[in-house]
Amino acid sequence: MAHAQPEKKTPNGAGGKPGGWLESIKTVVYAVLIAVVVRTFAYEPFNIPSGSMMPTLLVGDYLFVSKLSYGYSRHSLPFSLPLISGRLFASVPERGDVAVFKLPTDNKTDYIKRIIGLPGDRIQVRGGILHINGTPVKRRRISDWVQRDPWGNAVAMARYMETLPNGREHLIIEKSDSDQLDNTPVYVVPKGHYFAMGDNRDGSLDSRVLNHVGYIPAENLVGRAEILFFSTNGKARWWEIWKWPTATRFSRLFTSVK
Image (cartoon, rainbow, N blue to C red; front, side, top):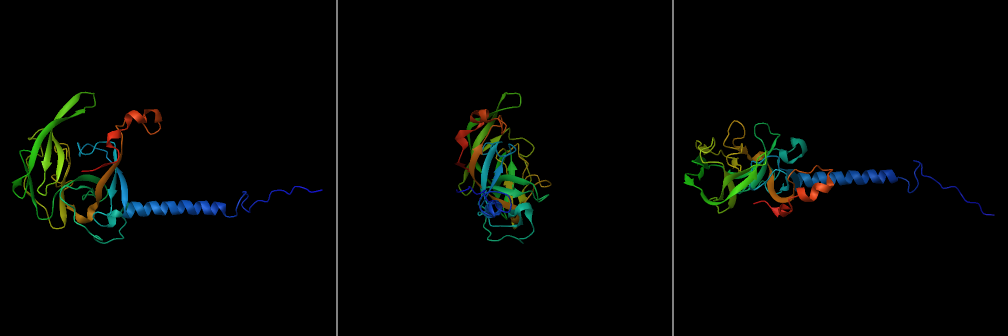
């Protein structure tokens, strides 16, 4: 009479192939390494926590930043590890690029602004009008930008289409043309540095404030913002799945950053 044999177990006490746990751990490690490589050398996700780049970028936007665009520095690496000196495979940003960079005053905080000034440029704002190398930048008034304040009231701000000297166009908003940063001295951008401003001209702490942001060293550039892949108005927590459809800004998904 045949007798059933007891199931044999692997040395670690689990049924199946020997070394199953080891293979699972290897898979996880490989996945993490691939993610780190992609994040370091290709694309890194960022989210927008403030309104300094309205109307181009909104609070709650999530976007991919291209690390390939400007080459690599130590700030391309996790925790800004000092393994790269200067910049490898460096490429010059174009005027009008929306760029992520490390704040020069602490080399840690991520900022996102629009590149306005290139090395050697003279930048000034007079009466709310941006001047580059002594020439006023063209801006065309279009419909107002309307948003809700914390109490739900509609607040309108003037919205303009601004055209940079290289022909790049982008939207800006202004509370007025006589705000604190609407009349500035002339800034001369040093060699190897850039000058950046927010599209929300009266609500942006940017290169116009020398003791906080100032001129951005090329080494501090992290990458160029390219694709907006998700956007939420903040009215749904991550676990409130039933609110996701009304909180998601579907019209902004998978759009390019201009």
